[in-house]
Image 1 (cartoon, rainbow, N blue to C red):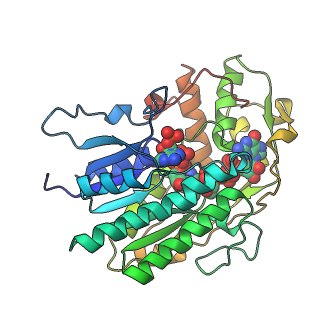
Image 2 (image 1 turned 90 degrees about the vertical axis):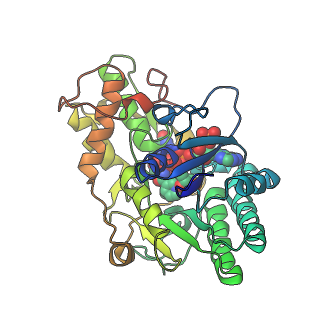
Length: 356
Ligand code: NDP
Ligand code: GDR
């Protein structure tokens, strides 16, 4: 077994998993990720980091597994013996969680419990701590109780996804307090990037803009334009995850920008960037409304600033523009700044319709 620090990431094929892998590889970690078997290969966001597992100096390894399969999780943990585990795996789409509540809760809630149990078993047999990061969410705040939201703000989850994240949050606290696990909850507000899943609202908008500019699409159908989100850049946020596990003591932290913008404002910024008027293209389709909405998220991450020395680097305007730039480039269109996006190789389905 190599002498490098070893990390295990669930959800490695997702947006955050890919950026976190890059960060950890750059820090010299050996990175192990759990991937689900699917009928099509789903490692697009990782392929630029691929290393042939047969070569002696390989640092990135993928293992088949699933958060719904506790036995498998325990086996992977025993064989890798990681120093740090990042639990990023989830059915992470809030709207979809209303359609598939049982599966969402099984993955997000029970999946976290299964992983915590595997860690507890591991600790009983081994005299060595594995540090654990749980990917908590600002969705846990749900119906507004107070703004800005910090670590002390009460949760009021408004979806099956958010209820499951609250369950996972408290189980993580409980395993820390009951069994002395080094377990941290990151309460991360929305974070986006060119690698964001295509059906989340920011990416749906920036992909549609590129397709409109390319003449491949005429309309963009959206739901509620009034909700407000505290949107940051995913690359900044994975650094906070890592920092949490490097502290002397485990704790919970809010990670946010401290600015909030409506979906309408995102539209305005993104369309204006390419000299278009969003009102000419956007139509409302009620199928994108949610049975219950989270109206306002605005985070206060002063604890993370003080204790982790963490601060976001990318502004809202920069985020919007870098996402539009990457989607334009993926369709071989020039972007307004004439820059090259490092993310283009990781973009999935660049040419596919964007009104899913
Ligand atoms: P993504 O949806 O991009 O990625 C989710 C990952 O989880 C994918 O790798 C997916 O695999 C994997 N996954 C899904 N179901 C299972 C399962 N049953 N077993 C194992 N793995 C599974 O999410 P993000 O990268 O955006 O988010 C990472 C984590 O952070 C998630 O837990 C999310 O809920 C949470 N979060 C995200 C925020 C954000 O704004 N991005 C904010 C706060 C929290 P596959 O590729 O096969 O689908
Ligand atoms: P969210 O992100 O629900 O905040 O969860 P999403 O981008 O899906 O929605 C943000 C807001 O936009 C409104 N909206 C639409 N949303 C989608 N997806 N599609 C549309 O067409 C559309 N039109 C308007 C939504 O109603 C909502 O108010 C994300 C996920 O990454 C979670 O996993 C994570 O925990 C939270 O962020 C923090």
